[in-house]
Image (cartoon, rainbow, N blue to C red; front, side, top):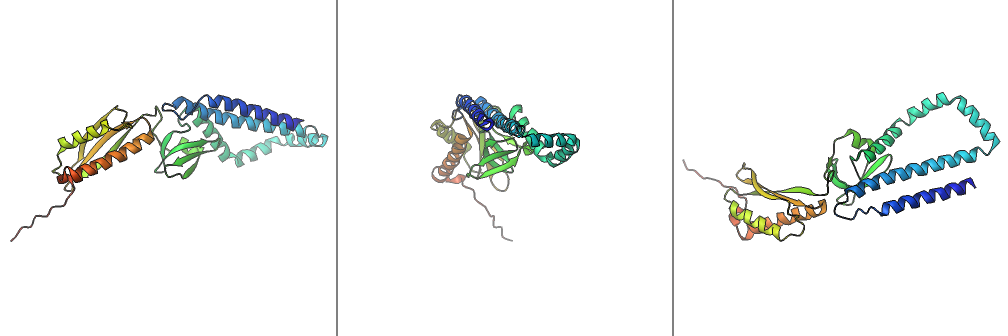
Length: 258
């Protein structure tokens, strides 16, 4: 009866959390609040399930008189056991508290776009002890929760899903910059993944016989930004090949006789 009651209570808890989670979809453009709520709900559901299991096991053991006597002897040496358990579970407890801190400090949320260990990806899952990052090539990077509380990392969607990106292209000194800017602005006007918040073209470096041009674009989310950056890079390459071949990078050699 105790086990059945615990199973029923766990089912009710899962149903309640699932009903609340369904009210916060994350497949929308502005999903910052939904990602925060889903992260907190996931951790709270796991904690509630663990508490129910522990209470059920305790109640079952208390129904056996022999176990009650054993429990009294265990409580007599609780001081020594607590010290040993604390030393053995130090790493686990650190990850546990780090996971709770991440969930309720709003520093990291499910579906956030992050850069960790030089890898770009999204937060796929957050548990009490580890965080799963889904890399852009479908790999999974599993990191302990303490990593995000002790190591600096980049969160592209911390404040909102809107994001700004850059594209760098190396061109020749003879590149017609005015024509390049006109081509860039005209191309952005045809793109649906450009949100119109901002754009710019600037020469950021001029060394080694060429110039480096930076194109700044904005998008509503990281996926749209990636596609837009690739499209801008391809269009500039086509423009240099067909319209302004003088912009193609080249190396010059000056032959001087004695």
